[in-house]
Amino acid sequence: MPLTDDVLSELAQLLRVRPELDDVCRFGGPWISTHVAGPAGWAYFHLVTRGHVQLDRPGFDRLNLVAGDILLLPNGDAHTVHGLGFAEHLHSPVVTQLRGALRIRTSVGVELDTELICGRLHFQAAPQTLVMAALPSVVILHIDELPLASRFKPLVEGIREELSDGRPGAASIAINLASALFMMMIRAQIEKSTAVTGLLQLFNQKVTSQAVLAMIREPVRAWTLDDLAHDAGASRATLVRAFRKAAGIAPLAFLADLRLGLARHRLGSSTVSVDRIAAEVGYQSPAAFSRAFLRKFGVRPSQNRKA
Image (tube, rainbow, N blue to C red; front, side, top):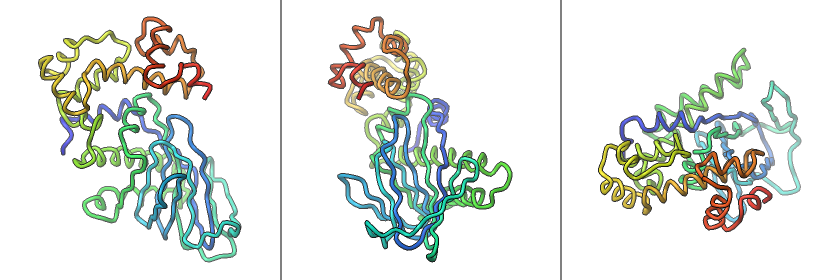
């Protein structure tokens, strides 16, 4: 299912995906790497460039990854990554070298048979809560499979080579390659017709995508149905039908959910006052915002921040 016009380019400017490359891991023997749950607005990723890797998440089945696989955990779930020969109380010693902010972690005393690049995605704008929430809890791409290989594989190889060579500017180049890589991953997920539902379906239709982008750009604006229909280039009735068909929700109800989602993101990722956040997302009074937040999430904004 093709994306309408160039909606993803507009969405990319709003999302501002910023990867952080944390570790280049070269492991052998029994090894394990543990990752705690990430803060709001962060997603974990692993690029397997050599060998076999297993990933465990509490409450989910074990995942098996091989060279050429890219794994994204959009919600920043806690997880452990380990090798096939993992034993809970037996780990090969690992030495860590720093190259700027990048850690090079290497098993010692064993043959190295696995390599992966680990990091996090930071979505610098609050709309990430919408897009990432619409993705599955785990996204895996097998880049050695056609038609992905021709586009994804050169990017992954470029990241690996830059980080391995350690030449001047390598980290910056690798981060820019990773930004392109993960926007392509999001596009590939949106274009999977079998997986496109809700918000992703809204982005795949011209009428609804223009209305959604307008709301994301200006969530504080006092939108009316007429305003949204005008921006979408459709009648009010057409816009309502399109929203209900794609996401099972009316446009203004979607706007209310959008504002509350943005507010929840701000509560978890900043120290801005609740009253200011209420105003930033379009609520005329903190009391109205608090009531709406309670109806949506079951807690008051201040309780959500404490949690």
